[in-house]
Length: 250
Image: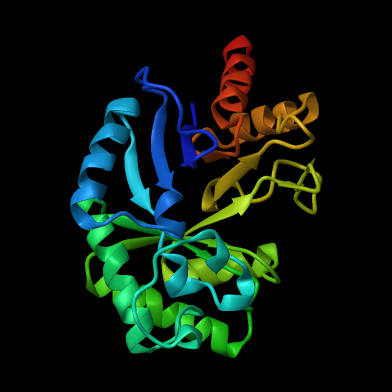
């Protein structure tokens, strides 16, 4: 069976019944407004009660990774003092360092050994974007933290996988593009095999995965049983259950 993961957001955080199926939880709350250290520890303890078998991985605060034009700042309320333009973009500034310190404390509060980095479209595959990513990963490695990298924007599949391998990070990439499976050039299994985690988002007004997507994921699992499937969105757990049912019928 694959490892099932969850991007835990305000849309899918409801429920109190322990769920042993989940092996990885990415904490999207810390991307937007990370709680302060003591509150983070209490919150992570509650998340562990809900998902007792899961590794908890906080997202890096968007003030480290996202520039103002990337559109997350209006969704958050907390910001350290400093020049607004000096935050984000993985810049080497005192402001970004202060924002990283908040994420580092969140990681400590969760007893995390990995952090997730979602890079926005403003961090491109060009020379500057690659240098900033290298510097970020090197600094985290020096602090004893491994990185899960979730790129958005212009990063093509081949570039993502090659650069992730160079950096020694775990890439998280979409399983579907426009709602359709992202096939290999040979027309075979989904995307990438065991070299990446696959993010599974539902589509349509109900955010469900459809029958074709379920079949594609089941075929991929059959070929790569050790794949990590990270479900996202308001129906993440329901979509996971639908795939689990299909795998159980095989």
